[in-house]
Image (tube, rainbow, N blue to C red):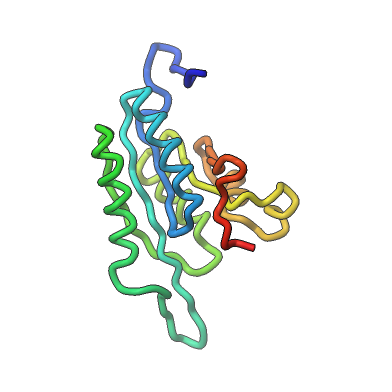
Length: 161
């Protein structure tokens, strides 16, 4: 089974610049694999985006996690892609909790991305709509096509339940 990807009207690459949104969940691995496969097939580049969520209450803002976690996640993903021969760079952003889809859409527009790829935790369409999943909201917000990569069944993160 080969990867069949569309090509523009004059032979231009449709997905020359891919924005890959990653987080610390294991499901991001499926998104990294999809971005790698598409970029390799089309000779495109990948921009790895990690958004650190910022909590805000009563005039105080804080970011969960240890300092450097975001950089380490983005850098390690860029490194893995580069080892596969894929041009990649990292982008770090901060967004208020609940505003991550908007920030992904903004970065995709700012960077002139042709495609956005992110992973999913495997919620059903109904669960995703009610829980306001990042992927479901991003599909409605983004001007670019959004590919939501899912881990093959049976390989999901077991500690989730």
